Image (cartoon, rainbow, N blue to C red):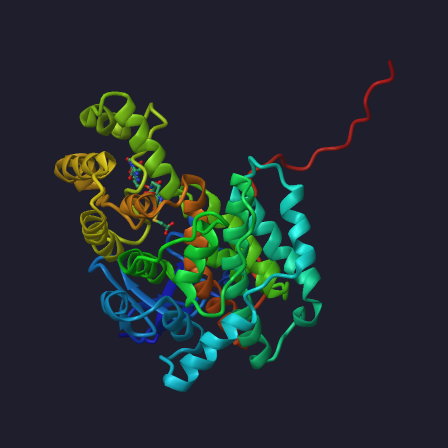
Length: 429
Ligand code: CMC
């Protein structure tokens, strides 16, 4: 392979160095293109633009491959825990026994939130979407823990904030749910590990202690692992972009939470269930809605379908579909929405429109079925995605701030507005 790609613009040749990743991915570096030719590249949605080199996650959308730090997602979903996977993403390798014990112990140390922050929950209307509360509270942590707010924290400081965020976000999410249903907050417990602790804070009450069921814990554990990172997606790119101005980690993560909220990204899990409920209420006519999804004059899209990168299948969706089946069987739940979702998938996958465009179910298509079975309310679904994605955001922020090649993110544009014209004052009345 040549070391340079050659571009010819107005008869002038520009050489762009070729970069090859460890999995053979190829790019050419256009960093000097503007100074050498006066041209920039235009790529709406950054569909063909690499913004950085990263050693965290590899994915191949054609082959349906996803690996964290080299380890296939299927193996992590089968054998790891969310806490161990978080360590892997943030530290770059799996922990040994002592490291995992110390990491888990530190989660306990940081699980409470500053008691004054409780006032925030009381100030929000009970109808607030929990993503609004979560993003605001995470940003507010920079005011409550100023000792961690540094332009360029040292390695140990970043690792400390990482644990603090992972642990406290879980508490904030559970508290925002309790606030929304008007029940007293349940504080974190030292004797429970990460997922049972979260479920206990969510579902225990003074009158009804929550019974921890192993299958539920494992299903949630798997969902969080599957969501933990996905390289340069919309929210992670947001975290990196905000952080590139040296905004602190809390502020950067808060921005990432807002980006995740949208229905084309992490809000899709909520949108899928809302869509399935709507179709069911309307008589369950699958063909009608598949036709609407294909109709360019309709605003309807098949939520939980399609992906910018996966053009074959989403390996996470495969694992989740099986988990949803297993969990519902084990809990003895019959969810008509699961049957409807399977029918929609079957019909869409045989349809020329979906085949031609390589549209497959994504991670969000079946995850909501599991959340429903666990008892998590609809508007908390994107919050569950945020809890899962947190270690990925932190790992990317850490990589970005420590990489000497990082520059402040500042895309360019092609101006298409008015050309120069003179100011004309408003005529006197
Ligand atoms: N239903 C119907 N048509 C679709 C869908 C869909 N869900 N997704 C894409 N298309 C069509 C789209 O209209 C376009 O058709 P045409 O070529 O005729 O104009 C073609 O497929 C390509 O779509 P695109 O919008 O250019 O693709 P994109 O890469 O910009 O968007 C996407 C990716 C995920 C935003 C989009 O597929 C979508 O809106 N899906 C539904 C929302 C969803 O499930 N989001 C969760 C994504 S996975 C979780 C995460 O990581 O965020």
